[in-house]
Amino acid sequence: MDIALCYESVLPARGGAETYIGDLARRLARDGHAIHLYACRWDAFSLPASTHFHRLDVPAGPRFLRPWRFAAACEQTLSKTRHDVTVGFDKTWGQDILYPQGGLHVASAAHNLLKFPHAWERGLAAAGKWLSPAAWSFARLERKQYLGPNRPLVLVNSLMVRGHFEQFYGIPPESVRVVRSAIDPFRFAADDRLRRRQEERDRWGVPAADTVGLFVAMNYRLKGLAPLLRAVSLVPRDRPFRLAVVGNPKYGRYLRLANRLGIADRVVFLGHRDDPKDAYFASDFLVHPTFYDPCSLVALEALACGLPVITTRYNGASELLSPPTDGRVIDNPHDAPALATAMTTMLDHTYRAGASQAARQVGNRWTFEHHYRAMLEVFGEVRRTKRAA
Image (cartoon, rainbow, N blue to C red; front, side, top):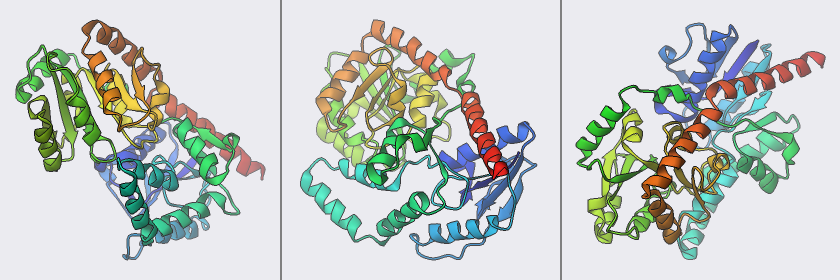
């Protein structure tokens, strides 16, 4: 097949959708499909050598206008070409398929308000968004994407996001396909895992007998680090437990919060890691009390490493869990007692051993290869429909 991928910036080292596009392009190229990339910038060394690159020169300007300009450039350029399948991944229109891995903007905005614990804070934040040109612009762009005259085939990565399409735009579930996100579990295969686990813990100053919960995120506020620290303060002191925090190197305000809560000795701030693999190896479970994640790759990576997962119902990846067999799902990230109870359960070695085995089975059940095959089926369907038309 001749397949066009559209995304403004494809620099896989930045993670997220850009990493996914690189993985998908390489797998498609391996099967001999022709890959065309329409973008403003890219890292050619991270993409297949056979990729056909099409640079779209979008003029600089306010942040809230750039997606409009890129989407218009995509639409204009694609109108002059013939591809079997065209795919957009974010704020674009005019493609055969849209796969918004970050979910709906309108749903993300609503969930972002939940990170504020008090109603007055949520009210102020909502007022600020109402005055934001970017918020208005992105909301209008999204309606053009999904409610315009030429509607694309929509793929989403969780049932939660599919529900958001119905909740916010009235698009029925049968009109939205679910193809879950995936990772390659073989990335976490290591014959020397136990050695690396001990070496990593030695660097942290954490004894081998301590149970370690892992938190991985760049956006600490959205992913629930503050309520998590409050929950750590409720975990019984007579149980050896540490929380390892990996992600954003700017963690000063959370270190100060840990000091105020009297738990600084139970929290290890590790800053940014290009590859958090050894942090997974050194930990015993993942705790991810997010306020919004369409389908958290962090949770999938943890499961592949055999780590039980504590997360929230606001994470599409929670749909993969079967609590309490392989983790816990809580309703409200602000519910520190519920979070503390879930973490305290993880301190039971017998429970954790069984949960770890179950988690690894879940992580291996849906791999990138399964995801790729599901995507190929959708691409083939689109090609047949276009040819019939």
